[in-house]
Structures are given as C-alpha cells and as structure tokens.
Length: 227
Ligand SMILES: [Zn+2]
Image 1 (tube, helix red, strand yellow):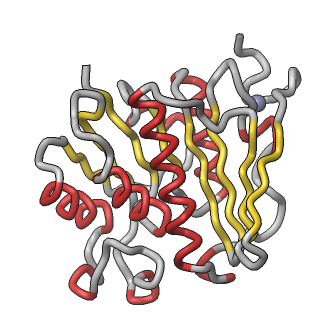
Image 2 (image 1 turned 45 degrees about the vertical axis):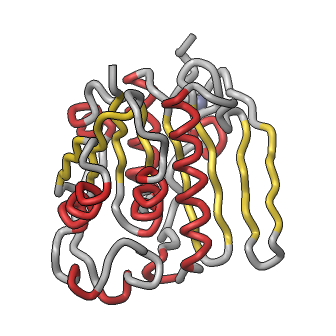
Image 3 (image 1 turned 120 degrees about the vertical axis):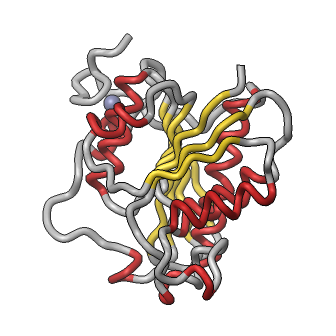
C-alpha cells in the first residue's frame, strides 16, 4: 500500500527535502506527502528556501510547495496544511496513517512535539536542524533507538537560536534537507540502514562530518516506557 510522509516545515529544510523527494524512485512505496507550515514566503527566505521565487512572496509556503510538487510529480497526492503545530497532540491528530514524520521545523517546541508524536504513533521520525555553519541529523525508530529526549532532554531554557536571528548557510540547509530525504527514501523503500542510535553532526566551516553513537536512556521521559 502506498505510504504517506508527514513533513513539518516548508522552510529551508522542508523545501530541500521536497526537492530531493521529487527525485525519489517512482513506484508504489510513496503515495502521499502532507506538508505543514503556518507561514508565508518572505524575501529574506529566498537564499535558503530553494523552491521559492519572488512570485511566492506573501503566499502560504505549504500551498506554494504543494503546487510546485504537483507539477513535477502528478503521481503523488500532495496535501498542504497551513497551521502551526506545537504539541504532540496536534501532530498526532494530523499525522494519523502516516508512515513517517520528517521534522524540518525551526523551533525546539515543535521538534520535541514531533519526537513525542512519532513515539506515540510508533512511526519513525527524521530529525534535522541547521544554524550558522552547523547541522545535525538523526532518525528515531520508536522502541528501538534513542529519541530526542534521550539525548537533549527537552527544549533549552532561555531564548533559542534561529535562522532568522542568527543566520544560516543556505547550502548547509540544503545538505541537511537532502540527507533527511535520503533517510526517508531508505525507510520507505526498505533499503540500507537508517541513521538511528547515531547523531550526524556537520561542521561546515571545517567541512567535517562526525557520527556519534547514541544510546536510549531507560529513564527517558519520551521513550523510556516503550518496548
Ligand atoms: Zn528517549
């Protein structure tokens, strides 16, 4: 049965994920992509949000992304949702039936909500983030691999860094987005091994990539009670 990807965020990461998914193998494995984003495209987004042009400014990213995708992959069902999802409950309600969640959001609240929703739904989560010259990527397989809360516990106290306030290297966002799409493709097509129980970090200034082994915590507030 064709599977559904639930993509949170149609910003820098999300638009790169979309570009890469359009190049994924055609066939029965992928049938639908749900794209969730509450925002409209701004001029300052264009350097890193690669599917948008000047014509998209002021228009809803989720809808513009869906239009972009339909033109290239009419074989897929694309469903845009213009909404800010910030709790696991909201994500669970929208992501019912999805085969996996790809989180390309830009804030810690949504990232941890996506983590908790994937754990509750029992579906993989592909997490990616980029700020400045640094990027990171990991895949969570509920009940098997470390989740975000095993490693980072929860959203940091105080003001969080953001691409808007701190900047980000456009091509780095592209790299992380394409790596997220590779993870999604492997999971959908049951090829290779996901980047689970590992955290890939990218230091673009030094062109270094490092994979750090991770372990589940038995007392993790997110996945500690999963078997
Ligand atoms: Zn955990």
